[in-house]
Length: 153
Image 1 (cartoon, one colour):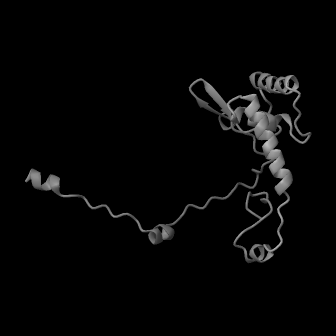
Image 2 (cartoon, helix red, strand yellow; image 1 turned 120 degrees about the vertical axis):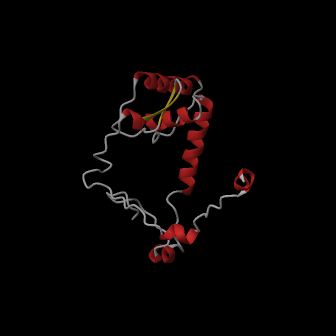
Image 3 (cartoon, one colour; image 1 turned 180 degrees about the vertical axis):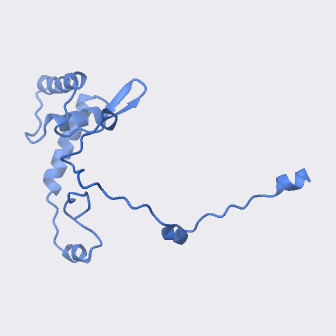
């Protein structure tokens, strides 16, 4: 009997896609008092840790950089000076550090990435919306920003 019962397979029914869409979803609303201006991230929000290694996730103003990060920014700036390289004036130290960290603190890769991104932005922005007005008006896509509740507008 044990053999028979152990051989019986338990059939677990997977929910169908249609059933999944019919399941009630939890409604999430952003608290009125929380906006991008009033959000103050904690250290756990700003950094992610992998053993002894730490990576910054939030680079924006008004968050201050610590001494180690400022040293790394100065190292990158020194690399630019030593190699007679210049970055476009629109690139600030926050974006510079974001690329430097993202390239594993390799200054050459970070410089190349920054310059390549800058060229891409100059060539492709602003986006030409000719012929897209019909789609924008239909509501199947949006192009602008987000409102104070982070909803697309």
